Length: 277
Image 1 (cartoon, helix red, strand yellow):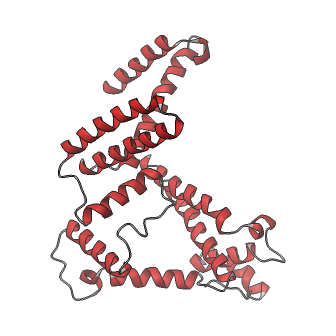
Image 2: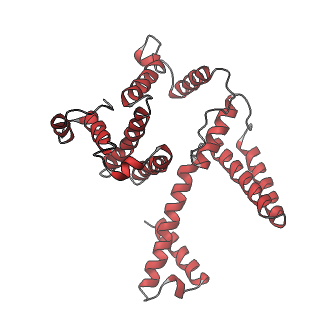
Image 3: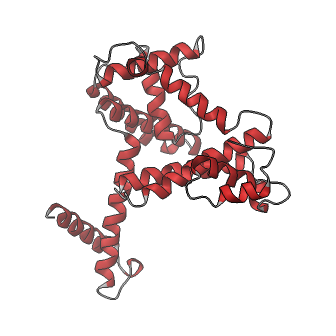
C-alpha cells in the first residue's frame, strides 16, 4: 500500500484521480507528494518533528467538531487526521522502517488480541467497565517489567496526561479514597499557591502546577473529563464575551471604550439570558 518504488506514471495517475481508490489512493497521493524529484517542495522538506504539531492540531480539530456537533464538518476533519497518519507512515517507510501496511496490520492485530470476547472464545458476559479493566491488564502485561507510569505520552495535553498518570497510579492502589479528601487537598494547594507569591516565579509556577494537578484528580473522582470541562468553559467564556461586544456595538462602542464594571454587568446579563433560553 505504501510504496517507495513508484508505480508507472499512467497507473499512478489513474489511482490518484480514482474517487473510489480509498486508502490506497491516499497512500499514493502521499508518495507522490514526497517524491524527491517530482513532489511538492514543502512536503519533501518535512520530517517527523515538523509534522507532529499538525497531527496534534488535527486531532484537536476532530474533537472540536464533535464538541460542537458539527457533523457535516466531521468527515473533512477525520480525513485531515487520517492524512497525518499516512504522512508519518510514508516517512517511516522512506527510512526503511514500517510503512502503512505494517501500521494497519499492527493495529488490527492489537484489536483482535485485546477483544477475545468478540474475536475469540471468551464470554461477552461482562460490563464495559470490566472490559476497560481487562484492556488495561493486557496493556500492563505487554509492558512487562516497565514502570507503572512508563508509556504515558509526553506530547499529550497537560491536563490529559495528568489524568492518565493518575489513573495508572490508581490501578496499583496509589489513590485518594474519596473526592472530599481531594477537595481538602485542593484547598491546601490554594493556600500554598497564595503563600508562594512572595517566593519568586519558579516557586509560584510549581505551586500552580500542584494546584492544577489536584484539580484534575478531583475531576477524575467526580467522573469529569477535565479537558472537556475546560473546553466547555472556554466556549462559555467566548460566548459570553461575544455578548458583551455585541451589546456595546449596539451603542457604537467597543470593550476598550467601556470599563470593567459595565462589562461585568453585561456579562451577568448574558448569564441570565442563557438561563432563560
